[in-house]
Image (cartoon, rainbow, N blue to C red):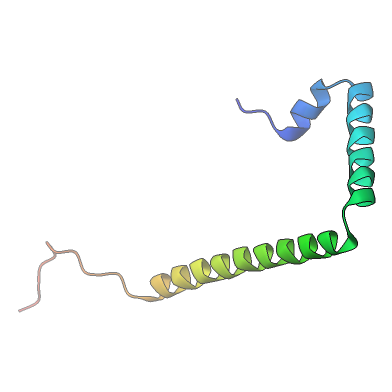
Length: 83
């Protein structure tokens, strides 16, 4: 049986989760103090481009599946022919 993320988080004590959340928040604030604002603008733009690339890949895969489904199935090779 596989455990889900929720199951794993439930096993971590609440005070540990609170500490990790606070540490993550402080890390973000620390990064914002020495990284220029352009870094975050570029990061967000790069993330958006990556998501658009995934969307394009998924759209192409869906289109291929739709086209494949629209084609008639080939006749079995051992099927009798009408003469």
